[in-house]
Length: 358
Image (cartoon, rainbow, N blue to C red):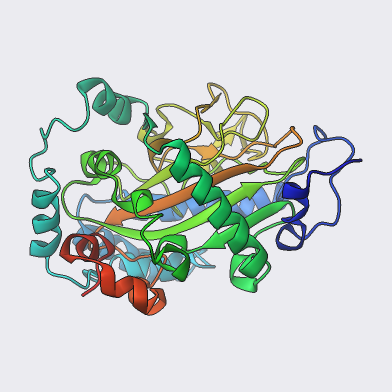
């Protein structure tokens, strides 16, 4: 099969040496057994119950302590450690006044700041996501694609970027040398993006990570999931922004979402279908694909059920993700430890406040 040179450049990083003949045959990242789904379900339900036992961290801490004090507990794996981390006290480096200053400078201090329309805010509240439309122009997109493609060749095959077969990935993109000139600053600093994040999380927010994610032809399917380890009722904790570096279509691996699922208070792996733990690879009733033109930004409450779909075209499907949380919560990236020193020097007070670095 003829393979486009642009696609072939991604082979080492994507851990493949050819494109499948049948691009539509399912290639799942992980196919869990019934027993694995059952154990995952039980642990998720316990963690969800602990988190949702109270509206305050003090109450959640008490619920966790009471559970761990039992003789017979079944909360193994990462969940107890992550719960301990979340409930161990504030983890922001900067005082709240810094992000408050940044939001004021960006015109986002007031909840009714006018940057988002009422329809966009309603979509975030009710559906769990909003398509902000094209925010990057053709010149920016061309430069970004070139920058991402070069990064894939230079570092995409390194262990820190490895994800699964058929995916080209680079982590921490916006704080690496590849962003010394600020080309990728809109990924975490665009005012429309931050207005959407602020609407979900409030003023006290911070960037917690980013990654470039490219699905090669015949790959890209993800099980349905949310970007948290347990279900959350009440205040959302995380937001994910997906930047469409290529057009997202019905066929090239667009993200599937389940509108309104962020309000369920449960995770897909903590859900039952006909009395059995959900098969995360199976379609979900009510799911839709988020399609859009290149340069668009889709922001969603990351408790929303979502997942990548399989790229059934012969072209790359490039996307850039940026993640945010409430400022006192743990970050998936230690920004202060990984940020490029030259990049750091050009950042102003507002950018550093969003990144939560001194």
